[in-house]
Image (cartoon, rainbow, N blue to C red):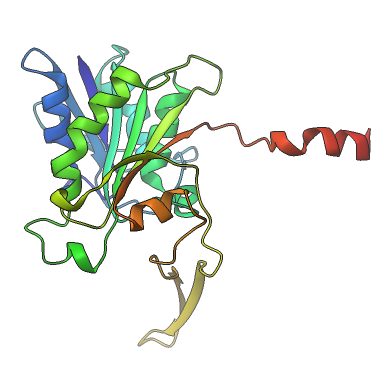
Length: 261
């Protein structure tokens, strides 16, 4: 098996090293793991592609590359430049430092990389590690991902639905903010919504007198609706959310037709 690995935390991120180990276990001794990851952190870029400027790419080691671009750029670079069109059998993105549950999924570069792979017709999984007080004193903040990542990926490959539609399915996996032994299991969960948190800005005046704005996120430990991704994560479960890049609100189509046509 040939696996392409990327992330949004950057080529030197510890979560990427965790995912590389998972990928090597999945690929097996006869398989190939190729890494194409951003040269610098790209958190929050979503499904951005560098459409208006070139992306520099550098080979760091055997099957290991850094690109000055987004995770989606890295997937495109991996498929069409690094692998010279020899498509991977699977694309893995992560393991992100922090959750990509609920509304975070809309901003996530980790999910953006998996989404681009799906748009290229490839099986793809995004993996993220929820952070919290229970995970701070663990040997690794990625303890749950280290302990359960390989099994989750194998189960998805063996038992999940992998369609080949125009907007094919890909999967968003979030590991709970607990140690590997405290993980209660895995639940398939829809994307939730944190009603009392949001992104905003905070202004700051630099020493030169210029005004800068910092993007601020809200509290991450507010539960979403029961049974949704962040809620099950905070209850100690790994969440698996099937996703598509199709943004159509299918539930509203008939009502909008009646109103407008």
